Image (cartoon, rainbow, N blue to C red; front, side):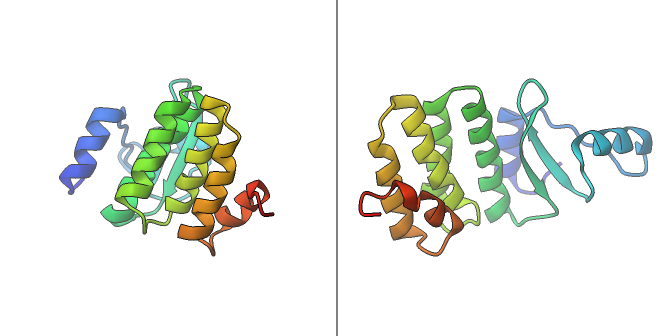
Length: 152
């Protein structure tokens, strides 16, 4: 279904892929589209086991961006399930393996939040603010984390 074997492998190992064809499955496509507010194709939804959306990608992305978004969705699912160590690991994989990806600054932010939630370690937040300031100083995520910085 996906031309890149890395995407295919990750999807087959970690997701239950469902693909709806706009024309051939018009009624089901319309129903699901309305349920999840999908207004463009492709829309890739990452849902938890209860069917709650945790992350979405609208439109096509190159593999170098799509893979980190898939990992990000897995991190958000783990986070929502209270699996903070697993979530932190997923988010850190993005920062380590795809540091230039659009979603990397957000992943770093959520890695810090996951560590804080899992370990109850407030220093995780100030360390995350410092890391964001260093790696992604112009990002929205660095600005959001700035309240955690020890030096203000």
